Image (cartoon, rainbow, N blue to C red; front, side):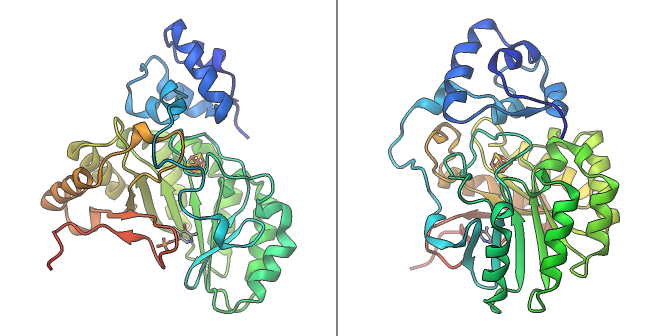
Length: 324
Ligand SMILES: *Cc1c(COP(=O)(O)O)cnc(C)c1O
Ligand code: SF4
């Protein structure tokens, strides 16, 4: 895997942040480790702590503030574990927390408190396969994480081959942050795997929050993914100080559209402990998406959703007041 920064002092030096940034970076990293891949380090150098990309990845003192309602498992993952790393929440779809590892540590991540060590599917694959084999109601497997592309290609290939052997599975989806943070990971071997599986076209959902993340190297990685025939969707999180205005969101959608990626979900922040400073209130979020709706074609407007524990799907936030 590509080199990444994990040490607060090197990060402060590398991004050319003021020396006094070190204490808060170090303190926040104790709670949720710092990780920034080389590709992003280059993009963020000299940008300053308020830059919308830097804000997503720079450990900050705000993370140490306890806020009412921000908890360690905001989306009820523990209740829906079917096997280690296998979450079955929604009809027909099962989500595999393939591995604990991510290319980057996003500071707003709802899994920042997740007990990955016990619950990563790659370490318990026979149990995961057994659970999937025993439930023919599941037709789609979502490889998620962590980030499934943290696994070596040969491990992914073995997983996909064993999934292909379960006749009731018809769809395969991959949720990943790699293309936008470490684009070199989209290599020929991975693309061949995506192109050749019986599940093709695989659905690949890219995690991206700001148009500037889609730089030329990332665009090239997205083109390689498109060439596999994959259906490309994106998901973003609405984040204070990152993408909380209509121009920024519209630019993101336009850029995605230009690369052949359909904006799928815009998530309201999951209320995980340590991420409260990123929250954009629901009424403001609705107003932003209304503005997007007024200026973009419908297919470039993502669905505004919230994850509510116990609900049968992501909860769609209505853009018009409900009647009655
Ligand atoms: C979000 C999510 C899915 C996928 O939901 P879609 O609406 O199909 O994109 C599946 N399982 C879990 C546990 C999820 O959190
Ligand atoms: S890549 Fe996804 S799972 Fe990993 S830290 Fe970022 S938001 Fe969390």
